[in-house]
Length: 178
Image: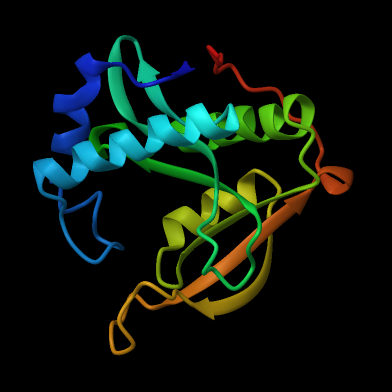
């Protein structure tokens, strides 16, 4: 199920962001303070916009983060709503990112009435790109992520998107608790 984060999720969220596999395509591991700051920003996004990233809850364990959020204004394709997901490695390869993404897209198109949802990843992140394609997103372009240093191998990203008019609703067994 997808649900809002609760204070009891803090420890797991901190641990997820200290996991090298999870952070492979990010500039680095997060300190506990940085993770807690991210949780605060997630709650602020919910408070401001009425939606945001959820905790992906698998049988009572937080398996990761998955949901929708507005991209920062410095992104070259802003304004846009982004589909995002980040899972703890022991939950990889079980379809949770795909199923959760389908549920998030359904929420975005049917409840929020969004016209387009984007997703982006480091060019070399084939796993994330595969999820985007499985949920019906289409590659659009490459771009340099503005918050990644120029010489970093993580700077080049790929942008995918799906429009509501092109989205073919697929059923997902994942429930969303709003």
